[in-house]
Image (cartoon, rainbow, N blue to C red; front, side, top):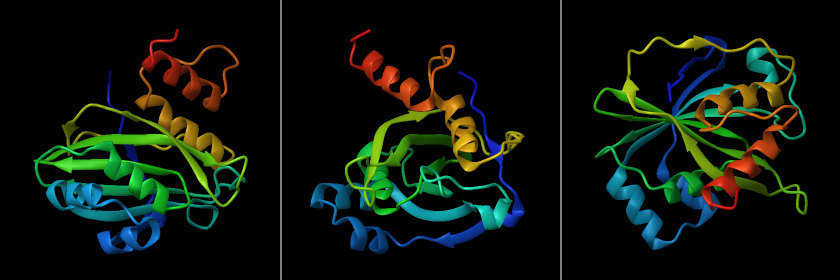
Length: 184
């Protein structure tokens, strides 16, 4: 798999450190997850906010904005429970860029509003690229009409299997889950 890193627009730069304590306030993680944060995460930075007001692309009910978080690691390892905790604390889709020893690894889940409770979000399993050099050339964001389409373009390079004809992003994610479970 070839890892794709995207170049995010300067207008969307947010560049703020996100204290772990803020995540704990919103999610109440278990002591085991807190321990993983302490052992594995050096710093979380909220790098970009891809929203109608920052990149001039229309939001949708399922993707009103997309966040890009940079997670500096202490030892190159990060359990997905940490990512899931962050995902559950932030009510928008997130693209993570893990950083360690001069390398970058993109990782994200497919995140959508719950059909049962619109205030909650459903988080899929995680899809990731390979570790690549931090100075790997980045691709420009694709030209799209809304954030829903942009989100699909950001997730697609992380998925291990290509889309089928007329397959929606959600259907593709569901098919990936079945493949991981050995049901297809």
